[in-house]
Length: 401
Length: 135
Ligand SMILES: Cc1ncc(COP(=O)(O)O)c(C=O)c1O
Image (cartoon, rainbow over all chains, first blue to last red; front, side, top):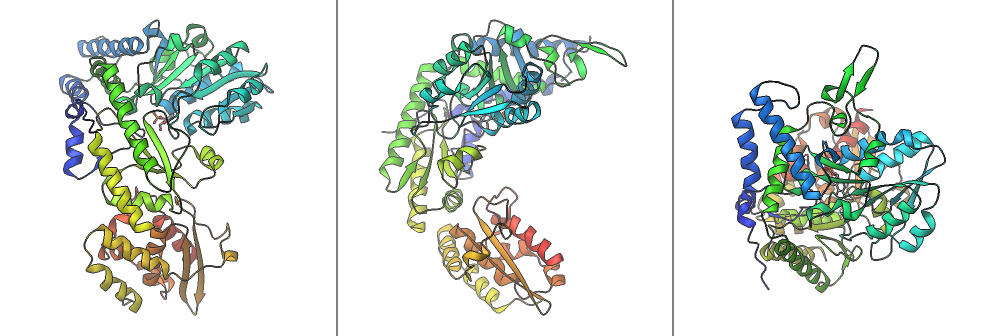
């Protein structure tokens, strides 16, 4: 069955890529942008850029107003209690670094940080390095064969020494939704802080951070149809109070002397330097665009395409999926074929998919593969994109086998 | 340095090809002709890092000229390595330093394989060759 995307024409790059004979299926890496978002960026830069939270002049006031309006939209989008619980970072990676440095003073040698075995380097390395700096133990929660955190083992491993749990919502390699409710409850029982990596999860369905009940939720603008350079940290009230200031300079300062300074509370106190103003406005515009869509229809479309992707892969001899993907993407290998060879022949045919370790080297090693090809979907993809991919896959395998 | 005869043959074979499929087929064939490395030579010291696939490179100097051998677990990369080796083997250090490798792959119709976003490892191999031959 052909699944058309009614939103495809909202993304001018899709037609441009098509003219270059490119089929874009690397959406988990970054997304194409809707015209409405591009227009908002162009409007800001062509009507008067200005720095925020600094100047008295009119352009500065307008920029600050628009910037804070974006923060408000993000808060609403995530159902955060208020905009002061939304910190704007320069991306998901910088968000995790902010959290790891900001929470450093709360953690003591001998305590534990728990992460899952499928974390992206961005939500692994900041904790790993923090553990090394402070003499903490990094506990890695194992996965089931399907690709979920194994709850039985997690129950054993999350204990009184666990001070923090950092875990993904949707795996960027396995496409599996993690059992967050149960995991967060285990951490909460121990009084541990919880950090959820929503870089992938936030792109596929509306999230309610209060219902989720995590202390921190992180997302990445560029994956959510917005520009690069902006990431979001939602923080629960008390949890935000535990963060120490990390990067210093700019308007995060309250009072400064040569030898001492005091700092603003959240959110401004955690936004050192000039923020990515344009990107933040772009994220607000992207959320306006998404908010006007029928979310149920978007999710149904993505689910139908995902099912089509899985069916096509499972129909082909020798294809081995990584885990049991549930949403948005699938990673696979083909028996007897090196993923680098397959990736090269797919790109020769204009199919943009990702090959390699997907910034999860420990997971790839644990799965015992050399890498994998990942196909990842966005709301503008349609069945023709999948057909291009499958045709290219068949051609490539014809040559390589 | 004039084109070694094996390189001239590669050029003649590749120049006439049209389309990615024919090129990939021939690349695979060239990869199969690669002089093998023994298992003992596939050491960590001979590994070239910075590639998506595993690559090993061994260098020998005979009377002032270089002779490289290389292999990979990826078939297309083996082909690219074979095409590189026919061009560079037999050169002395000065010639190697001068050699226009990008121009060579361009002439073969494989210029894109050297683009900076490619993680296929060819660039990492070139860097290692330059290090080995500069010593
Ligand atoms: C699960 C996950 N976490 C974190 C990141 C990092 O996001 P960013 O590019 O915004 O730093 C990514 C993106 O690659 C991701 O897929």
